[in-house]
Length: 495
Image 1 (cartoon, helix red, strand yellow):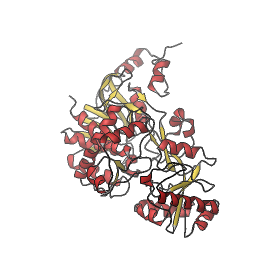
Image 2 (cartoon, rainbow, N blue to C red):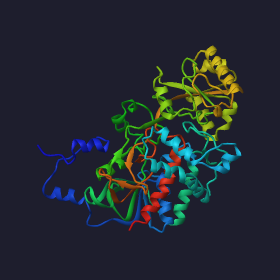
Image 3 (cartoon, helix red, strand yellow):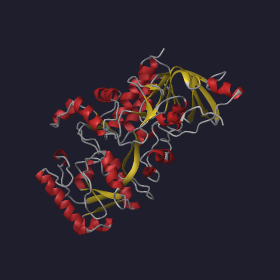
Image 4 (cartoon, rainbow, N blue to C red):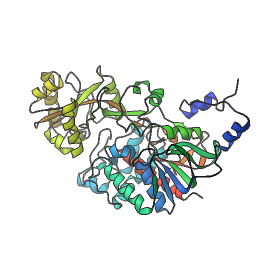
């Protein structure tokens, strides 16, 4: 029997199940040893960025600002990735905006909440870098022309009111300003170009030299003389891969662009020697139940809505950690519930959220009515219980106390009392994968022994160790831009 190139212990330490080839001899052994280094490269650049979402474009801009020649490859026909369809909430301690709202906050508080929210499983140094540099990154984006609202809020799962929202819908503003900056800086973006392999000097040893990609259906070799930045996102849209680590995730829908978050770049990094960690830390958000196609987002501002189940009762604190919310939904007999807001809450959301709700009226995923009795009938829940639940919640707002689930007083600020009322189906959909490639504070990719892989960097959801077991709402957008900015700069300075 042939020996395997990785031991069982090695596979387990990598945190992912991969096919493993036996050791080969002759010409194939030489090909394996050299890592498919081509005789001729089709393109040479200084910094190669893989992925054109928020982390990728931030890396590209940062590297170009540092003076490097930069090329971005994107497997889809357009840029933006999941950032384009994200809610776009950006967590940052911001004394100027928060002080105007009477919000007390600090970087240390953000650090401690991020660590505690991830059950202490995140890398403390990476968390400190994230929280310390988030505001500077936000200002960096503002310097490119992106505008944020003057107020902050506590987005779903954030644990504190420090979530900033751009004035442009969802993640479109981020991608617009970064795309424009890339163009101004001379960054080349090759769409329709999919990474196949990361090429190192000696298979999974030595410097990362470049990549083998597929472009126009043909092999396309790209040399990166300074560094490669992996910024291709997570694997939330890969049911089989996520179910390897949490079987509950197999049949759930996803909030992600299903063409983006498939994890193949992460697996290519692992094949090239990168260590993977935390792949069973998979986060869900309210989304459409299986069999439905319309995702409603009436659950954004935790002070504006309540969750109720099919019996018309609340079943969780709306401002709880996202893993707590996930498990509360998955423990319901139906595995779905409803988010309910009044007219004031509905109008507090941006136009895209409101338009989605209007579409949901046609698909049966959203409901509206002038009375709670009528709303309950459309939702097919007991009217008496729904009215009782809403009345009890409104009383909690008056008393600033939630004896049932412990919702924080700062989020008990808006009653549900002004018609028309709105409800939307809320089930769990796979939203974010916290695990991925291990990096150091300079975003350099580490191998299975904790050593730096020269010339290889990573940023965004493809990485692990930044959020621990659970990600705070609003921390992902801060993460992708903060570490994307660091990764591009690090790669550009590589000699």
